[in-house]
Length: 431
Image (tube, rainbow, N blue to C red):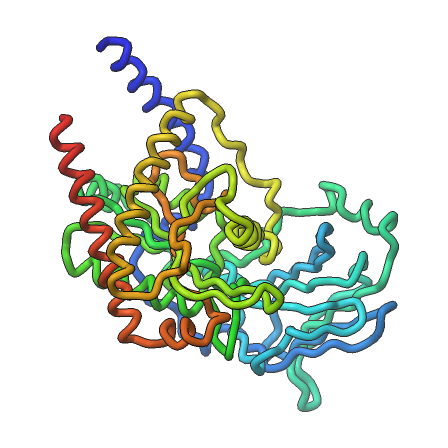
């Protein structure tokens, strides 16, 4: 008995050390924890009305029309070759499809919010290039203010030196500090209230967001579909009054994968549910129905591996440097905790499948596993739910239907209640 007690004490110490890693990035956590706060009206943010490319494979110019001047910073990244431009939060009012096509050195570009107060434009390049010139023009002679970026082709040898650490400042600090109303400071009183709340914490993670649209089909973006689903699930769970429900994002903001895991770990969540909506490449045929994924070192099939690889690239899509992430704590006690957590995750996945199959269409192989980074919290049961395929017309019709969403949310809420009721009862009987 004494040995077992000592092991639990050691386990608690190790987990505490592991949980301490995310503390340096507490501002994003506070934003995720808080309920939606009053934000500055979109009209107060600079608005972008048009964007265009000019030039050829030797020199390419990007021009963004704005209603006011902005500050910015631009850096280049390799593997794949990209240019990342950080600006204060911008209200992008660009025509649909802007950036989907390229010209010259630019294959395509995308844009969006990466955090409250900061937006980002990411250019996918055809090869190595340098930023020959970049500047902002003030409005004059009836022409709007403009952000201009001029790119010039270089070879790999010339490109690599520009990536030296002293020439590669951190990307995140380039983003403007969010306004106080968006990211409130946590007071000691609030912290005490959080500790006094004995309800189990459920973290809902709508995938993608901001600059990362996820999959798209027939004018619908995965990021919007899963956010609507996540908000509906939060509302359903909060009505029961049994749980404290936290969203990793409740608006169109990009959240790095590691930060999504930090939210769950820092709150000692009882359950983490990541919501997505997949699409198959045309060459791979058609698929339909919901699929529930758990974490494993080896993917259950090729499709699961493909999806995990795609989802794990979300940070690269938004221009974040994955090498900046902290190293996981390696310890046998952490490994033991991970095994127990995976058992609970699999148990919830089976329960969720049982509830969902009576109300929504399921994939022919509804339970799968793969190495999703967003599921790697060692001490939080986690699943990733693909609620349907946006590449399948029937699934897409369901995904945009409020009636279908209500039924699917109801079955998911029922599974969450069943899972947590059993865990809470088990925990109570062991004390």
